[in-house]
Length: 289
Image (cartoon, rainbow, N blue to C red; front, side, top):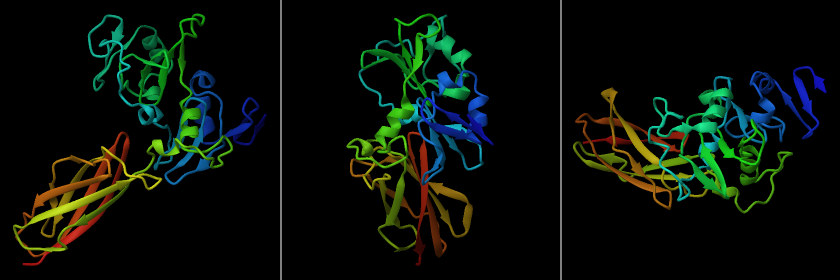
């Protein structure tokens, strides 16, 4: 079934409409790579998104459809790595500039024939076992090795769209459901910065305390933070602090010297990075004497 600008999928009882439809239809083997839609398109606090069995599509700030980095959001390095082939040289493997890990054998064939880095993103792990299945993790996807399948179907994709939708506490009709694991996935960073001294002297030492919480107001650990400090008379060359990480309480303290000798307001841009999420906020203080 089709309507103007849309296509209905009876397999899951959902529509795909523009601009997601064009992106879907222009992707070879989309039903195998993305799977069927499991929600309609809907607004979130950060973007318009639509979930499919294996992926989530979203509209970026420029209006472009992109694949959400669910592979990176889900992946946690653990003891499941079974070999070091992810970093060692092999004639049956491929490693491009900027990759930390190789892709090998049938995973490599699948990667190259089904869209490559444009679809899956770069590899973010070597081979691992996940629930007794051999897998490799990518920014946008997770490959699974199914040796009992027929030729051409031994490489499959994990249902990351379905898994993520369940993890954040929504069902396939976009309704919020109770899910004890919904707080485990960080989708948003909320950052606050408070200085110890609203007014400092020249050549003083300032302390900035930064708090980071997620979409559920829970503290986020291991957020990489740094601060760009813009002085009144030298805004083109900001002072930048060394990176620090938040603790288990979502808290980090950053000490830095006040370098400007001119009285005036000092603006700070606090930048936090967590996996593929980047967020920033502002704070300020005043040099008085």
